[in-house]
Every structure is written in structure tokens, then in C-alpha cells.
Length: 191
Image 1 (cartoon, rainbow, N blue to C red):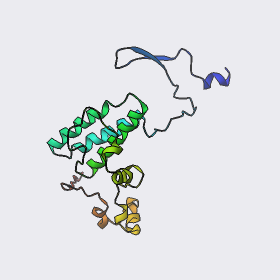
Image 2: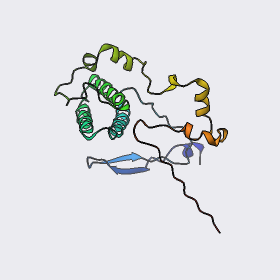
Image 3: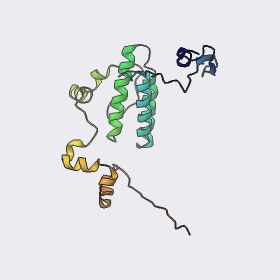
Image 4: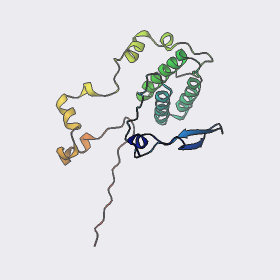
């Protein structure tokens, strides 16, 4: 047997899968012993996978809002989901979603999300003030609080657990904007 036979999967190795639309599709199997590197394409800025991830993040953040605001967020997400006919629409869809998640991260809906979405959405750059648009979409917006802490405290906060004093445990925990932290411990002595 030549070494080529080991490196190539068998031509007849096929798995039949049923897609969501009920159509059976055949996909080749991959031999687990095969040591061939698989290339994974990085997510582009306006890919459907990136959008789906950001969409789920917005849905999670919406849970922190009031019921009335949450319904508006869901209505906006449903409306934004329809923007997929062209690359320009997908790009605009991603910008709307990014702005929505920034708004949700700050705990308050801002226009245009304070009202139900209109039937035809204009480009976000024409709705949001230019200074806000540039601040968020030109890379000057930061969601972290890095600028508020001195650098030595940041290094201490992010150091491995075995290098941190036990008395600093609570100082290393994230603090929620609303609500509180609850810690519990359960233990027993085995006899």
C-alpha cells in the first residue's frame, strides 16, 4: 500500500445528511487519523456567521432590558434580519446590529431603537449624528473600562489565580451594572 492511500480519504466514504429543507445531501467524511491541516476561513466583517453571533449577543443583552424595551429590540432584530438581499444591505444590517448592541451594552436604548422600525430603513449614517457614527464605527469606541484603571491594577486583575492573594478574589470579579453578586460554597467532610 502506498503512502498516498493513507493520506487521501476513500472516494466512496460519504455520509448522507438531511438539511433543514428536507433535501438529502451527501457530504464526504473525514478520516480522523488523517493529519492534513484543514484551512478555516476567518470571519469577514460582514459575514453571515459574524452576524449570527452578534445577533445572539443582542438577544442575550435584551434580557437585561425592561419587557417593553425588550419587545422593541426583538422587533428591530426581526426587521434587521430582512436586510440580506445584497452586500450593501448586509453591510448596513451589520452596522444597525452593532449600534444596537452598543446601545444594549450601555443599558439604554437610543434612537432609532426607541421606536418601532420603519418599513424602509435609511442608512444608519443618515440617522445617527455624524459624531456618534464616527465615534462608534471608526474604531474609537471601546466597551472596556481600560482607561479608568491604572496599568498596574490591570496587570494584577488579569494575573493567574495562583499569583493573586485570596483577599483580592472579590476585587478581580466583574461587577454588574444592575443586581448583585451571589457566591455559594458547598463542601463536606468524607469519613
